[in-house]
Amino acid sequence: MVDPREATEAFALPIPPARFQLGDPHWLLELRQLPWPTDWAACFGRSGPLHVELGFGDGAFLTALARRMPEANCVGVERALEPTRWALKRLRRERLENVRLVLGDAFAALALLFPPESIAGVYINFPDPWPKARHHHRRLLTPAFLQLIAHRLQPEGTLLIATDDADYGLWIAEALKETPGLESALETPWVHTLPDRELTRYERKALAAGRTCFYFIWRRSGPVPAPPLPRMLRPEEAMPHRIWKGTPELSRIVETLRGRLWQDGETIWRVKGLYRPVEGDGLLIELLIAEGPWVETVALRFQPHGAGAWILKPAEIGGLRPTLALKMGVQAVARAIEEATPELQILSSTI
Ligand SMILES: C[S@@+](CC[C@H](N)C(=O)[O-])C[C@H]1O[C@@H](n2cnc3c(N)ncnc32)[C@H](O)[C@@H]1O
Image (cartoon, rainbow, N blue to C red):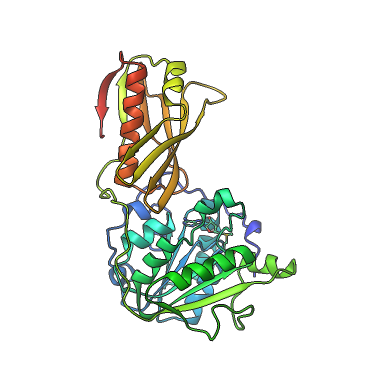
């Protein structure tokens, strides 16, 4: 296996990527540019069982899957650019035609791109364990996310999860047990070895360090109620933003925004942090958005925008979910900015 860190080929992913202008048009797809749901048979140019790996890292497992199942259409979802670059390099080298990489958030991809009962296999290898209790809400495998996976699996479709974190393993076991329509395909809820498996980069590290791995193989065995999902913006809707003419008083805006909380029914927005850039003018606003079980933290930028104008917009880092709640969060922060600096005049706004 080639160590992806040895990759030397010059390669840059544009941010945001231009429409598939990467020299590999059929391998790399950008979540925001795909139709909801996506017609995967059209995308692969043939129909075939869909297998989806979430958080594919360097792509070794995904490409092995595609090699072992040439009849399958294999989709990988990853939100980080660097691993995507490694996986793409691997695909270029192996010229595998039955793989597509989606750059974006696993939750949003699963919710938007895949219809109910459309996936034959979902694979999640070594999801980030977020060991501190106060970070548990960042874990990918929440009960709500498992219900979404179950809902997208075909009857008898399987879900494979691997982790080397015992605490996360027990949390996953508990959450799987609570998920309607799923049962273990093994005799026990998990096993500690799974022979004949392509080891992932994290798995190799875990095994070399002597850590015990937990492997779960669960299958769709019954009906799954539609999961509660955040309301998403349509892909054609612009990312929410507002532009003003005038000179904002940043210290007053900071005072107004610090610790601010808004609530609308089940949805809560809380300003978690405010940061000033080391150089230049502006603010980075860390905003927590909780829509029932769906919690995420996003960053909004408030910064100069041409001569005499300022813009408030989401900072597109880490695969934003384009939800209605994000739009409403930008709206709430924009109103607070206007409260602190009423002299600002709106030049344009999508919120
Ligand atoms: C600990 S690494 C494991 C990588 C690989 N599966 C392996 O076993 O070597 C977790 C991976 O999941 C990705 N990831 C985490 N949260 C994600 C999300 N919400 N959507 C897509 N990818 C995610 C990270 O970028 C990272 O590449």
